[in-house]
Image 1 (cartoon, helix red, strand yellow):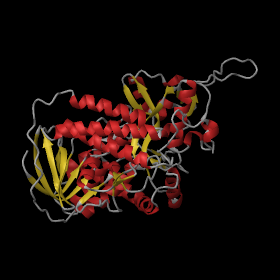
Image 2 (spheres, helix red, strand yellow; image 1 turned 60 degrees about the horizontal axis):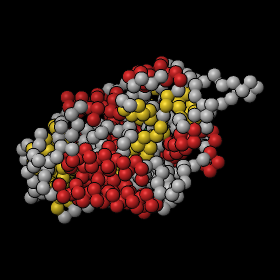
Image 3 (spheres, helix red, strand yellow; image 1 turned 120 degrees about the vertical axis):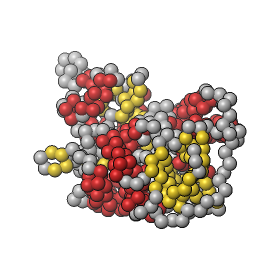
Length: 518
Ligand code: SIN
């Protein structure tokens, strides 16, 4: 790798990174976008299903829905920025510039309905919207702009001096070199790799958050890790069953076999057991995500299983991609799709303002690694692609035009070929077990304390290796251990259950229908 300079260095190539790169390029900056991904599938955007919510006739109701889903904790100014810019940015960038063809019906866009939205307002392409946005957007930036894209290139450290960031040390093929930049935009995505079951790609190791925290940037709301209620776990992997399926009429059923009143015979009209969500929330299957995720957890504990009954509509016609995914994983959706929650999204992250500016000079953060305040303690469905797109545009435009200063970069040590191949794998396994058992969908104060102890020791072991060796997997493990500690510490400090942060006493279970009813 060669030492280089660029006006704007964007780290990450999901929707937020692409949006920032495009805006900076349009503002006349020389832009370098580095992504550790080798294929589009390695960005979380590619994995997104439901879609992208936009403002229709009633922006205030959209704002209200975001605020309510967050249990009143989201930042109202940030919500306003999102909602005010939603329709226009989607139209300008995705429809008019990139040429994405969202699904339509006879009346125009075929707006989808998802949980906690007051009206259908989700633009989608089947239920695999992420990849239908990501691939053309990536191709557009690669072919139609002057942005230089470096694939399979990871950022290991930020180059910083006295509260100002001057670029990053990049690694490719076990070689590394500094790239100095007028501005650096972190768009490194989420943290799914910290949990054993996640809807994110395995590359989601929290690198941007860890690098920013190490450089001294503020991070916040880290305890708010969102679990998606309906993931399908099979031996061949975990995959998401979009909330859009519940929006279309999918019903959650537990393992309790209902009896037909007069004959006592099994109900045969629909697959699976009893419908339970109306007992937990007035919006039943379309209640806010955190409530559905905990109800599914409880019902699985109480009755053994939860399935998603899709018999009320033509699943194969409405969700062809999901039907074929079920088939690939040997899941017979006609008898109900077995589901359980899985880690899905981090609502908190690197603190930014309405232009994506972090608390460090010349450092920006956009997309899932950032904390704009839009999500508070719980994110409303189909607002993450939108947030990445809107903040990407704003940060990219703001980041252009800053002078490049070259300073002495941090020194990294030569790679030691003796790094045990299994070291990172073994430590990751331990880290995921701790996060799953003690920092998962429900948490106890004592579990959080224990988790911090184990994670601190683990981070110490990783730090000792980082002092003597450099490899991408070691740096990813370091990122994961730093971010796990940030999450468990924030969770331990927050004594109030709210949104995705749910505390129980030792030995207590998740809410029963009675305790959760609202
Ligand atoms: C889904 O399709 O259910 C996920 C959408 C989202 O996470 O916003």
